[in-house]
Length: 451
Image (tube, rainbow, N blue to C red):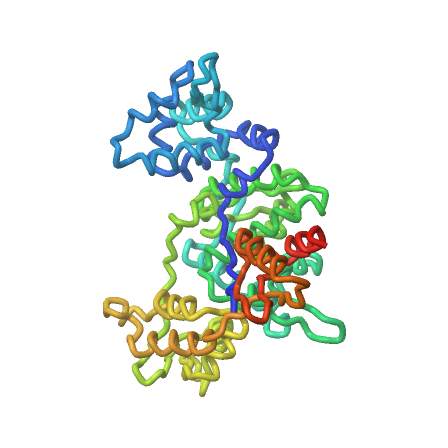
């Protein structure tokens, strides 16, 4: 069965996909430019800094000489990324030789950043106004609990102990692609939904933020303004309070939505209301590949296929239920069994053996993190074997052609199907053959012309 994968894109992928006009608008902000610079590959950062005070374009040929021959692959990746983000503007001279120059707005803002240093987007509120601010540990616990509560409500609202601050429209926005709903039936997880639950928290966050931004135009909001605010939010100091009244109406609405996700915490004082960014918000400008998850593992897998999960989380219990049979549950321990039936249920819902093994490996208990392997080899091998057992036959959409008026027409049709790369099988004696579904329309047109 073909596997469906959710691509966890980060902010810079979304920024690179914006039209040139909107991308130029983003570079009006110093914080956006700094966030984009942070996300670049190391070699691309080096090129930006080398050209930061150059006023004339540099030829592509000259830049190719900046690296050794064995670094050309990284050089091409760096140039490609800089062009995607329009940091580099390509210029073609009269000799048709390509040169690169830095975007003037980007160049100016990065110069200011280097000369004057980083300045917060807005001033935090004085301590004599804000009282009883949460500690960093309390804030991290709040973000974790809010995110877990949101996921439970997203998947099944009946499992959430307390509702999040999302309205029904926002929940439907985030559930798009994760749940399928039919008339007179409760919503069910799709293949993407099952895979979403096994993803790392950072990857889940990117997916949700991407959906939030992609639907912003439906709410009458320019996605450029939303991306700009979210990236600026990542430059706020963790744990400090900021006055909500300093935000625009669009930004205030965004803060309300982000509070439900656990990216910020709202507090009401006697006269003022403020928001406090959590670690989820301050990590937004970090690229997905660079983001590091500091969560503590909780899973122990034994060679007899028993799984012990030291957790009190309802969400983690529901995740384990996706691929394991829960035998009994204590206040801080969940005992599961991985067997053929539980894994077949997972495979039927689009979860692959690699995803299950990766989840068990990444969430290993601290006591066994140093063990090699973290998950017993007999367990991982058996999970892969059970998956392969279901994939012995590969289904291909195809069409059968027969009853040809003559052998010449049959041979011509076979040759044409072979040229298209769609010929799967032929029987010259009985004069019929099979082509894949992609070549069917072209074959029909060809046979009509033969008539």
